[in-house]
Amino acid sequence: MKQLTLAAALTLVPSPLLAGQCPADIAAIDAALAAGTELSEVDLATVQELRDEGQSLHDAGDHDASVQILADAKAMLGI
Image (cartoon, rainbow, N blue to C red; front, side, top):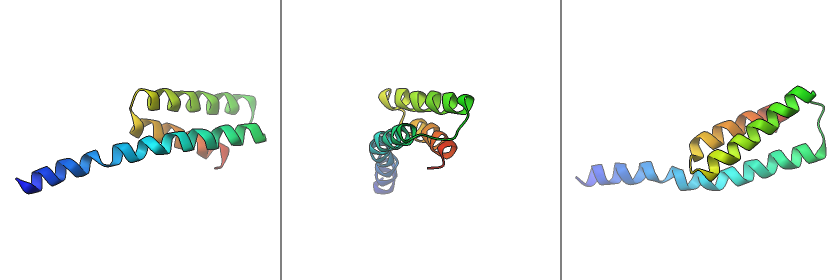
C-alpha cells in the first residue's frame, strides 16, 4: 500500500513543476518575437498560433500539452 501511495504521489509532482515552465517558455517566445527574426510571414504566424495555443492550454491547466506546443514554437524560433 505504501508503494501505491508513493507512486500516486510521484505522478502528481511533475504537473505543478510544468505549470511554472509554461510562463517562462511564453516569455522566451515573446522576447524572441520582439527582438525580430528572419522567419517568413507564414512561419511567424505559425509561431504566434503555437504560442497562443500554449497559453490557452496553460490557462486551462493542461501543462504537459502546453509545454509540448511551446517547445514546437521555440524550435521554430531556434531557442
